[in-house]
Image (tube, rainbow, N blue to C red; front, side):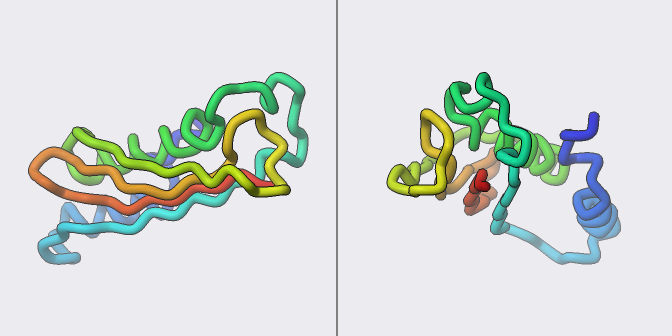
Length: 114
């Protein structure tokens, strides 16, 4: 439960504002996730496939599903491969966008670092 982004205080506050219609008619959001997982990085974590997606972004997309009440239908992402700080087998950073049902779009960037 500690990694469930939909239960974080900022997501719950945004949800409250959306439910109260205090933010108006939204059609776009920008999501940036920064997470330092390398502090106690275990060997298996360094070998997991696409950690920036599987360990980070998946929780953020789930939070957006809750906020929007819609599911993602299309994702476009570009990995950032040449980062010297990346201890992972696969890229530890990417940028892209997620399109949800009814055309709602979210730009997203995520980075796992030291």
